[in-house]
Image 1 (cartoon, protein in one colour):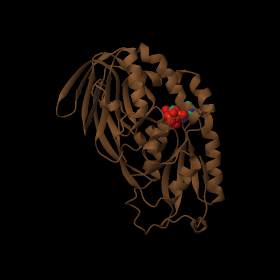
Image 2 (cartoon, rainbow, N blue to C red):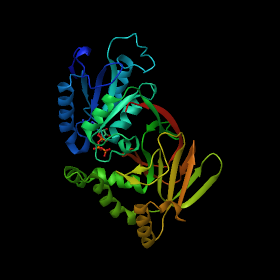
Image 3 (tube, protein in one colour):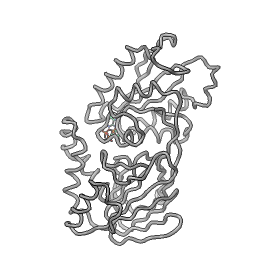
Length: 338
Ligand SMILES: Nc1ncnc2c1ncn2[C@@H]1O[C@H](COP(=O)(O)OP(=O)(O)OP(=O)(O)O)[C@@H](O)[C@H]1O
C-alpha cells in the first residue's frame, strides 16, 4: 500500500468540487496484458503533479480486489450521504484501475455496501463497462473525468443467483452461456490475447477465438422464464444476459440495453447453418441482427434460465467452469462516480 497525503488546501483549483477527494485506487497491474503497470505510473504522476492525495492498493492475485474492497468498505470508505458537509476530511473515493474483471471484483466487494460509490479508470482490453457508462477509455481522460465529478450517479448491474450452488454474483456487463462463454474460456487460454493486447488489438483476440468456435459449439436445451412466459429452446447456441449493449470489446449485441434502466436483456441465438451464421454476423455488424428469426430478445426485471447440459459460462469475461445452469437473474443498483 503506497500513500501520498497532501493538505487539502493544496488541491488543484481547476477541480470544481465542493469537497476534496482522497483516492483509494485498487489496481490490477496485469490488466490489458501488463499495460496496467504503465497506466498506474501515469495516473500517479498526474495525481502528484496536481497534488491530489491517494493510496494505492495493489491486487496481487485473482480475487484479491474483492477482499481489498471489503476491507476498505469496513474501515475507510463512506457513503456519499454520510458526507454532510461538516466533515472537513477529504472524501475517501474508491477507484478501480483495471479491466472489466477488476470492475467485477470491486462490485462484488461492495455487494453489502451498495451505497458506497466507486470510480473507474479503464486499463483492460475489452473495457465494455467504460463504454456503457460513458467513461473515457483513455485512462488519464477517465481520471480527469472522475476528478471533475461532484457526486455519484446510480446505475444497474446484473445479479446472478445460482440456485444449485447458492452462489451470488454482481455483474456490470454480461453473463454468457454457450458460445460467448466458450470464446472467453478459449481466449483467456490463448497466447493471442497477450500479443494482440500489446498491439492494442485486444478485441481481435475474441474474434479469432470466435471464428474457431463458431463451428465447434453445439446447440443445447435452454428454458427461459421472463416472469410472464416460459419459452423452451432445443438448440440454443449463444445466450447472453446483459445490462448494456456491448460484449467482447465493443460488439453491440443488445442495442437497446442500458445501465440506467432496471430491466435486464437476454439474447438467445439458435444454432443455424454456417451460411446463415455468416449472414447473421453481417447483420450484427450493421446492427440489424435483432430482427432475425433465429434471434430472440427478452427484456424484464427478472429472468430464470435453466440448461440441462453442462455449459461454459462467463461473467464480465471471467470464466465459469462448465455447469448445468439454474440461474435467477435480476438487477441491483450501485453508484458510479463519473
Ligand atoms: N496480481 C494479479 N495476478 C494475476 N491475476 C490477477 C491479479 N490481479 C487481478 N487478477 C485477475 O486478472 C483478471 C483480469 O483482469 P482485468 O479484467 O482487470 O484485465 P483484462 O482481462 O486485461 O481486461 P478486460 O476484462 O477488459 O479484457 C481478473 O479476473 C482478476 O481476478
